[in-house]
Image (cartoon, rainbow, N blue to C red; front, side, top):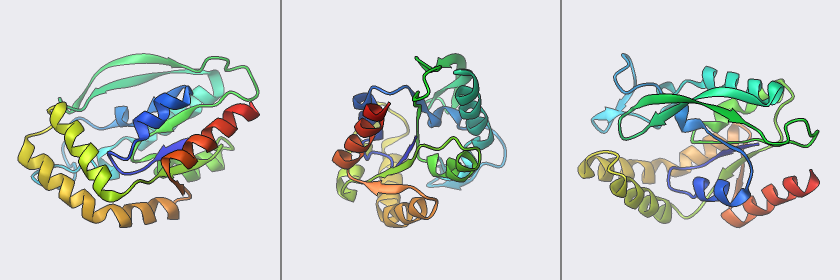
Length: 194
């Protein structure tokens, strides 16, 4: 199952509430000092798929789906780089109903390849009112000191403006837009079916 949505829309909270094994796709970002990364707001554009290693994320998901486990990166957003590697395992992998939730702003990029591989249970685009996403994103990013505050505000306003286009893009990739409650029910239904 794939889960995407704007930064600050509640994806992490939803995954915690789901109880499902969750692969954080943000761990597949490129290092901030890699050459040729897209730029926006005076920093690397972390909302552009070119800042992310989609091939490595896809390979990890396929390996987990095939073997139940994979070595995946640990990424520190504040440092803009990978800080280690961990073993990711799906409990009860041998069950025919084992389910993995892969969450991140670029999850939509994986819809078609996972569908083609017969590994897609579904794809959700989590939606909440734009101003709420802006507020939760800004307070989280300031609390975690992810970037300088002026940069966070400038980036936040840009994302607020582009959010309708982002959601339309995720829908075009095959992600179904849902509110938090609808997404929670959809995940609970999948878990109950297992």
